[in-house]
Length: 323
Image (cartoon, rainbow, N blue to C red; front, top):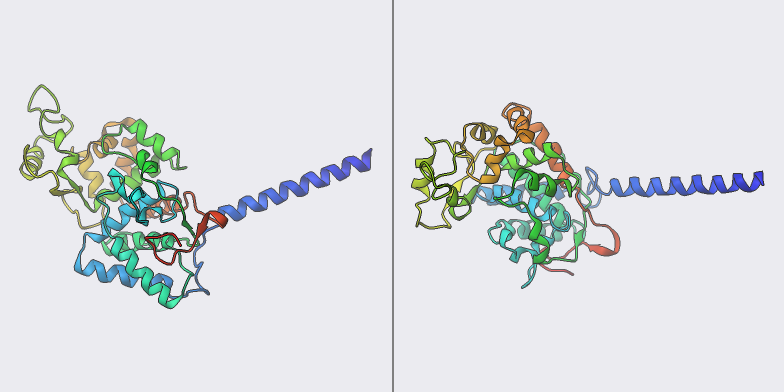
């Protein structure tokens, strides 16, 4: 009996160790320098491609950052947002204004010439997002690579992307479902320090939001309201773009959080970060110097959501089409 019990214990220990090894292997599916031997110039090719496009159109920087976020929040960071098709992710409402696809395609073409079938589109997007932040005077961080590309892309899966009307509780739930905490939420929304929004996504805050006073959302700074109304007249062009960081929309800095503290957030969901007690302390903290460092950490965390491996993935030859 004793020898039988020992054998069972040994088996169970071996089984547990095997499971632990498998878990660690999954957790380490990405690593810094993944292409060091298989495609040594991978990161420099992506960097130079992003720079080339940025020089002719600075709006590609926030576009690529947003695209990476939208990719990771649907099916994980697997480049599913890049796939073309009548029912693909990119056709979903929140993704119709995504931009920068041509940058990823350009980088992929160059990488296929240098290292055919090696570098995934998911990794290109993760690297391009980092390079975009750096080009707008933001922080640099090491991007773990080794993601593979997904084979599923459905617009219906994008229904739970964070929305500009979400309450803080809903925002926290959506981030928590991806393994991201409240601090990550505030930090990653801080990416709005670069980029713009169309008037149609916040104009409702400026007119007839309430039946009292000036009719605007009372959390908007009264001195800021005339500026927003001038940019977005009540019956004006809803597609007109307005900077999300009123003071420095082309520079990655902490002024986005300073603006929230002064009632100068453009999107309702952004301004709520200041009015809700559970997120307010983070807004206060990241108005300082620590934001850049923490942003890189949260980006790495986000970029490891749902990383694909094995039979459910591939290395696409074209980022817009499954092999």
